Image (tube, rainbow, N blue to C red; front, side, top):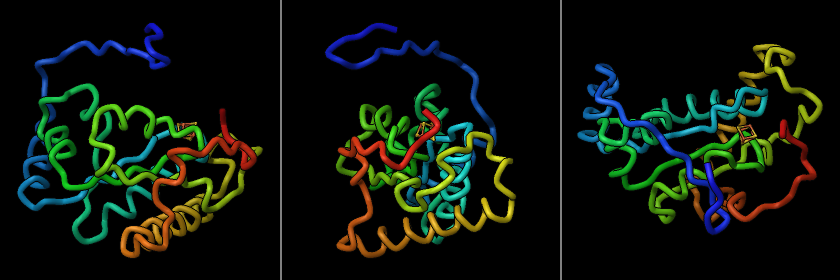
Amino acid sequence: MSNLDQKMIVKVDTTKASCPIGEIIGKKNISESKIPVLSCEGACIRGEIARLAARNVSKEQGYGRGCHGELIAVPESAIAQWIKSAEKVVLIDGCFLRCHGRIIENILDNKKLIQFDALSHYKKYNDIFDYDDVPEEERKEVAQSVADWVMDSLNNPSAGSASPCATSDDKSSGCCG
Ligand code: SF4
């Protein structure tokens, strides 16, 4: 890894392998013009809430769960082709650090990337790292609240919850970083 114009360059080894079910789902989602939903997949409670919320949004009509791993590391896969060719892509990061937003902005056309900072919506668990320190039912409720907020913003863009995190340096809400 090296610094270049204040960006990090990460080398990824290529692979000839492919995921059989990923190929089927990727092609199906392309044919159905589904909107991919990605999350940061962070290991802490913030990443877990983002992951669960992305799962819930992806169950809505017209949406599907995207895999950032294949997007980044298997770029010729059907899942990656689906995400790259989709009309828009939804990304839910766990917090203001925007770990995936800052990567994926460099892979996809920013105009079609709709970003959310989940923590900015629910604003708690600042002193918790492990997700199982929050009861499962509570995790599910908070994640559904984030998913509802995301869907409200997607369905009513003028309400304006999407993408403010792209320029946010607000660290007042706390994070796992
Ligand atoms: S630091 Fe925040 S944005 Fe980054 S992986 Fe963790 S929860 Fe996600």
